[in-house]
Amino acid sequence: MKNPTTLTQLIEIFRSRKLTLSFAESCTGGRLSAYVAEQPGVSDIFLGSVISYSNQVKEDLLGVRRDTLLSEGAVSDKIARQMAHGVRRQIHSDWSVAITGIAGPSGGSPEKPVGTVWFAVCGPNFEAAEKKLFKGSRVEIQDHAVNFAIEFLIQSVLP
Image 1 (cartoon, rainbow, N blue to C red):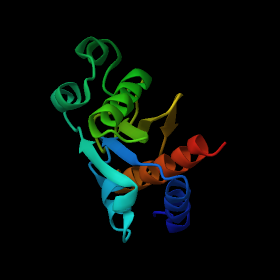
Image 2: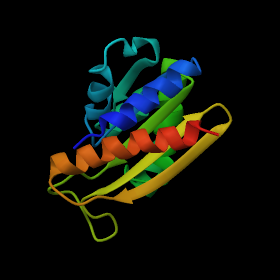
Image 3: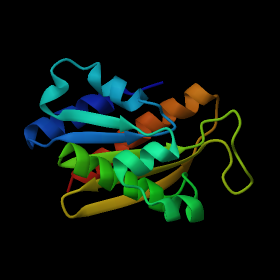
Image 4: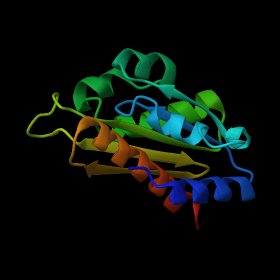
């Protein structure tokens, strides 16, 4: 379940600071973008997103390095960071969030089980990444990822 209070807080922070935002989403398939875009008038802060479900789209649109994809896999710290930098650069936003993970029900491994999700936030003189392991169905994992991305962004933007 999504947290509307947190989203309202995010929008207020970005509006008050006149900041813009973009997303690079993989395992969430655009759920974060859709959730933000549901809010009236959000076009003043939300510039757009890239739904980079395939590795080819990650490379072609976000500038993710093929050698990193091969060595680290798409669900990793380095890929999340490269996605966040790439979408920020492509969309010209002040801040960006990237999400890459395994929502299931298949696709997991012992090293990266279903529910493993990497997040990266990129902003002016700022970069951070964090890994989470969520439980639940595919949709529940995606919703957990959306909620965490919003919380992570708020924590990153606030001093």
